[in-house]
Image (cartoon, rainbow, N blue to C red; front, top):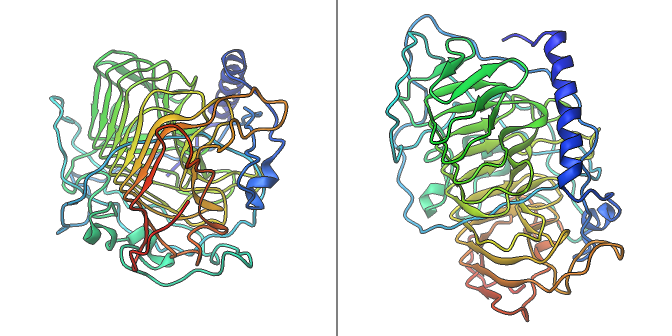
Length: 454
């Protein structure tokens, strides 16, 4: 492993500052004036995020092995049997105790790929990748209403076993056995072995940059993340490692992007080298994103995209930087995008006492046409935020908006693996049962199948 040069860090810092200036010109920027309300468990008062001052980060590159070695995934898994759908989100801010359940190191997961790429690696050397180590820490802090972490129940592992979770797939949900890079995949190091290919190039400042429409990235082990500046792109069967206040995969005015069977992570769970966002819609205008069967860990926010299909992903062991006061989000949507979103058949285990596994916030406009179906959820202040019940949930100065509509929440399983109430304060907040087209149906507790009311 090696660190990037001081020159690369300086370039990254200038690049971040330039991008932040561009985002300010196209995105509503407001202060996080009600962050304390989410952390205190109040179901209304959502905080508005600000694109803050971003800084450079130290990136490490994977080591290479002397000869071809297949990716060391887990073998002998059972296929998922449940159905699925989609979702997304973006979120940051507020300070909590820097605690998470201890998690052992493990090999990265495996799955059976659904498609193949016409291109194959030509380099003779491929890495054997293992999941990054995580610091030893205590279980998430609790409140009097939330209770402490509990033991494995039904579809969820014990809190200490989320990195090596082989339990959830027995209930038809994702875990390490059926997400991420498939076992046996030959991986080519970028930039160690290749620095360019059809439709993409790599440099130390920008990472792997995709500029060709229809590009397929397959079987790469990528240091420094991916920036997609084209449409109809496929990223599959690849490892993406990034650290700091950045994203594993960034979508820049990109439509119809598919990200499947990938591992997206940082080596560090806490501190400045945790990954800020796993997959991020940079300008908030991407359409048709499909995020399928990925394994995402050590990110403060896993998915920050507002429409598309998010299905079969395992999101767990979140990253947290106390200096930035990260909010912890699995799939996070900020409101105002009324295109359809399907979050279906995912396992999202928020091992912190804030903020959520899935959130439909109305910070920037009404939530509409979102389906949350057949997911396994745990942790956070509330495991699910279901859209504001009375219009926008920001401060009084925020633009007013209509109540949420066509929010369908069905067949989800809520776990008490971290907190006896699912999240610190409960399983769900801000679902508007009276909203036009809103449906809450067949959502139950893991292990008992007891119905949950919003």
